[in-house]
Length: 214
Image (cartoon, rainbow, N blue to C red; front, side, top):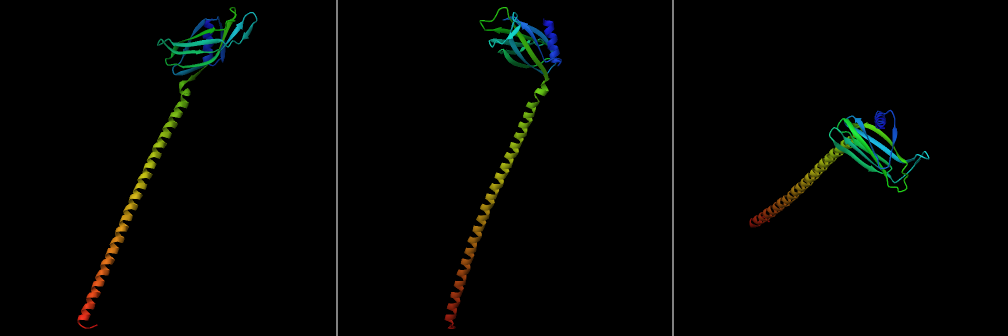
């Protein structure tokens, strides 16, 4: 049984088949080795159904559930522990190239489950490079950096505009101050000239009156 599952899993990951299935008793677990290259993402989906041996037919039991675990035999660490309903999906990333142990534990909480029945486990798995899986993330990261760069440029443009506006206001203030001073001194000069002219005319008039020329 395990050799057949191992062969089927290998052909699935090599793309020779799309899915395979096997049968387990209620509350039983089946484990099989899997050879995987480094930096690959394994994605899979599974379906659990009751197989009635007497009637030779599948019965959908929504009270079935599965626990899928993956252990890295190189580092002796568990890299995935998935618990799901009778229909589910799972995925994990291969960190170390080599053999991994994939286990399926199935059980039902249905009190009317026939003890003579088996649970059919149907698995559909696919293997993809992590670079392909993370390509979208890289694109989003590049897009985020581009947006950040554009925001920085926009911020610099706004600061430059603010600086130019401040300089324009300062220039206008200085220009108005200079114009006001020019007008002020022009008035002062005209006033002085007027006073001097009035004083000279008055002085000449007195001079002429004293000489009896007028």
